[in-house]
Amino acid sequence: MSRIKPILILSQDAGIAEGLRRGMPSGFCFNQTSGLDEALRMLRAEAHSAAVVDLDSGGARFDDGAWQAVSEISRLDRDLKVVALSDGVADAGLMALDAGAYDLFERPVDFKELCVVVRRAAGLCRVRRERRPAEVRANAPLLEMTGDSAPMQEVFRIIGKVAPVDVPVLILGESGTGKELAANAIHLMSARKNGPLTVINCGAIPENLLESELFGYEKGSFTGADSRRTGKIECADKGTLFLDEVGELSLKLQVKLLRFLQERTIEPIGGRNPVEVNARVIAATNRDLKSMIRKGSFREDLFYRLGVVILEMPPLRDRGEDICVMALKLLRKYSSEFDIPVSGYSRASIDSLKSYSWPGNIRELENKVKRAVALCRGKEITPEDLALGENESAEETGAGFIEAKERFKKRMIQETLLKNKGAVTRSATELGISRQYLSRLITRYNIRTR
Image (tube, rainbow, N blue to C red; front, side, top):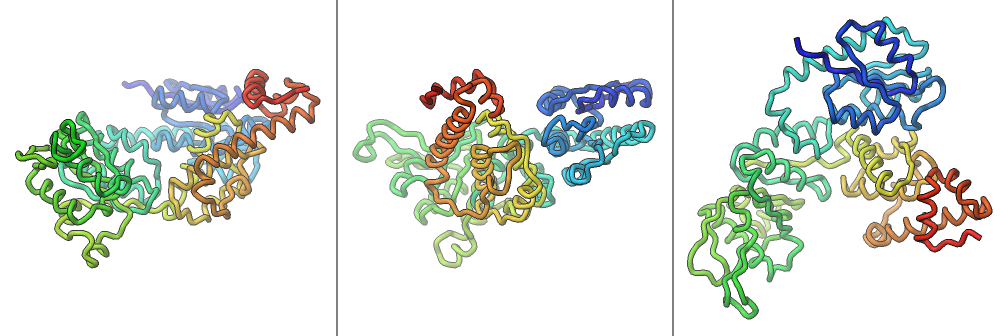
């Protein structure tokens, strides 16, 4: 008989594990921690059969964003059922259920009933894992793409089916919807995964240079061609060629690309002999190619050659709860990167994330969360931190953002030191960072403490 996978317990209360040990059948074991990072590490290191998350341990919340742990654990292992415990705080319980909790218990805990529910959760987890096809379990590249919504599940289904079949794929979708991630997943799940994935953005290279980038050139073919240059298509031999923003190709280059798709050979500029290339082509665009065909700016025969399979990436506004899951993932990323202790989102900020239209899709979400973490003054992100009503220029989202973050950090440190009369230890405590880190920041920003 195979060993029963452990139950994960995320709580400061040692009595939770003790109550489960007494009530659960022999054979069950438990891993307990009070930190979300450690819990996620445990889940990555070993599969678990269920998780018990204590939203509010003994009246003293172990993490201001504890309920959001439910979402992160569910995201990491979609088969795992999470049972949440609460001290009866309605908002925390409702948010945990909204984040995907399987069941919710209020204190005082009836351990007899809790054990029944945990056993049921573990059984459901085992059944789901046994029923899932082996090839789906092997689709690790899809883990880079977050999404439990119906539109994203359809994307995953199509990628899983088309990746092993060596046909061209055309990925359509608005800017910022994750088209390159989808192309990368298709490549890594194909028989060509050990070959190169060669990426070229057709809209980022001037038209007069794009032909040589794609097809290469022979030595002496034009002024300045001092040696042979291998084009991107040839570099993709035995691998995958990803043509991003393929709708930007000129009609002349569309003809050359069509010839390659038909004959599997290319002719470098100035070349006399065709070069055979064995590469799968994945193309992507945010443009309406059918409208371009009607206007005569995109070849219909090329459209059908590229679009043997068409994959449509959904806009972020149509992905429901995926927005909050991605926002949590990004918050943890930038909170760690900036060393700013932000634990989660306020309820109001979650509502604003859900109601916003996200014209810039995932790219805009990442920018907004990055900005919010950098400017957050409390432990939770507020609607003011997200500033979803503001229209920012490209300059403000680029280098200007980094400068604004640095100015804000410097000003906050100066104000806190002034308030504490230059006492570094007391200021570090108030800022929620270590004394050593504050000292490094004082040196970096050349701040006077006296």
